[in-house]
Length: 292
Image (tube, helix red, strand yellow):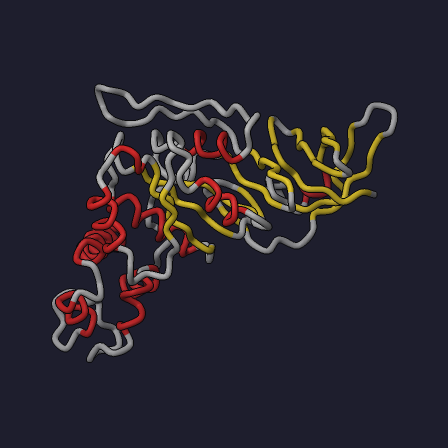
C-alpha cells in the first residue's frame, strides 16, 4: 500500500496525491459501517489498481485536527483575509472568524488585503485595534505585490485554511502565490458591495515544500452555537482572557460586574474598544442562543 493525502472529494470519489501522482479512489465500505467519512486533508493508505491507475482507501491515519465547517482534516492554521476597501473591512465579521479559528485551536494570521486602496493612516488605525492580540498581521496587495512573499513564508510547512468573506481577494492572493492555479475570482457587486462566491467545493492545493492550502469559501457557517456557556466566550479573545483572571469575580462576564479588570484595561487602552464592543455583541448573541 501507498501513503498519500486526500486533496479533493467529489460525489463519493476521493482524489489522493501519492508518489507525485493523483489517484481517483473509492473508500472501503468498512468506513461506512464504522460511520467514518474520509475528509479532504486525511493522510491515508491506498491500494492501487495498476491496470487503470485507480485505487481504494484502505486506512485513514489518525487526525491531528478536524474541522466541521468546512469538513477537512489536519489543518494547522487559518489565514483570515479581510480587505481594507471594496468591500470595507468589517471588524465584527473578522472577530467572528477569529472565534471560529480559536475554537478549532488553529494558529491564526490576519491578512489585510487591498492595502493599495487606502492611506497608511487608516491601515495604522486597524493595526492598533489588534496590536495587543497575539496574531501576526500581513498587509497585502495583488496590485503592487506588497506582502505576497511574507504570506508565502507563513504558508510553508503548514496546512492552511484561507477564510474570509467573499470579495476580499482570497483566490487572487492564491493565484499570486502559485502562478498557474488560475482560480476563479469574483468581482465585487456594485449594487451590494459584496463579493460573489467563486469557490464551490473543498480542495487541497499543493504549494510544494510540504505546504497545502484549502481553497474553500472559508468557514461555511458563522454560527456561535458551539459555545456552551457565556463564560467560555472570553477565551476566544486572547487579550481579554489575559486579564480575566484578575477580575474580582471568577465567573465575571466583563459587562456590568464590579471589580472587572477587563473593563479597566479597555479604559487604559490595552484592550481595543472595538474588540470589546464586539465581545459584548457576541455575549448578547450567546445569551439569546442559551435562552432557547
